[in-house]
Image 1 (cartoon, helix red, strand yellow):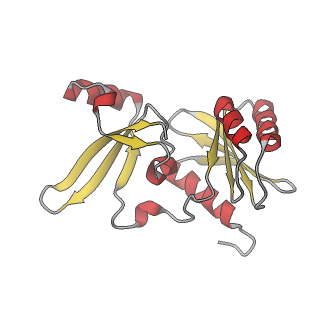
Image 2 (cartoon, rainbow, N blue to C red):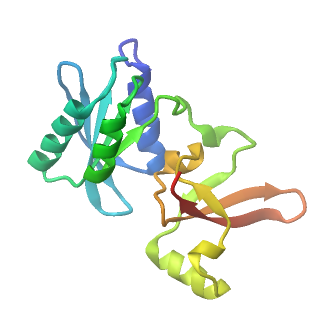
Length: 183
């Protein structure tokens, strides 16, 4: 970490690493650090904004990000800040395909801790294969909230299925699946 790297930028880099994104472009504007990243799962680009100030993020920032996304031809946006989000900004972001990373998002890789098991998102093909193998509907699986720190870190959205791989003293390796729900 360089002396000039902010905590928010560190969080953004951890988020990029955990989700397997590839940075295509990085720009520094007056008070916003902008990353264009390639999302391997969807094979699309996303625009990630880091706002290093502690100011409240409102509709103005959401509209600015939306314009920048349209200019770049990008469908998804992500904002990382240590400030708060207004309720109107949260609503507008949800409608506009923008993910708001909460200020309580950890500034370290939480999967490096020995008690936190590895979490992976299933691809659509793996999801269908899993559901047919066990003859279940997604809602019949145990649930994990989209707001769970591990789910948020890997970019899980409602409707996804997460594979959790734990070390077990008796089984060696224990695999479980969770259905991601709103919250």
